[in-house]
Length: 127
Image (tube, rainbow, N blue to C red; front, side, top):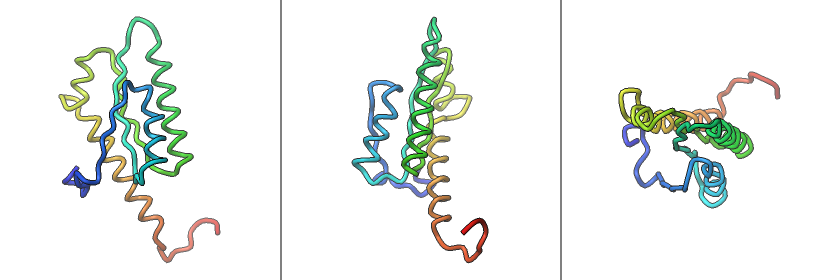
C-alpha cells in the first residue's frame, strides 16, 4: 500500500481463527486502537451443505453494521468460493487480488471522510 500513501508503520495485521471471527476482531480493534479503517480479509469455501451461505451472511451483515455504528470504514474482503483454486485465483491470481481491492476501498473511504469533514464553503443539503 506504499504506492497509495500508507506506510508499513501505519498498518497492523491481526490474525483470527476463521472468517466468522472477523467482526469481533474488527470491533476489538475499534475499541483498542485508533484505526482510520479496518480491512477484513478471509475466505469461506463452499462445502456439501449451505453452511457457507449462513456464515457469509452473518459476516457481511456484522461487518456492515459495525461500520455504520462506528462510522469507520470496515471493508468486506471475504472470498466466497467453491474451491481452493478459485480462492487462489481471486487472492492474487488471474482474477485480481481481493485484499488489494479491499485496501484501496478503505483508503478511498478514509479520504472521502477526511474531505467531507473539511468545510467546503458551500451550503448544500439541510442545515
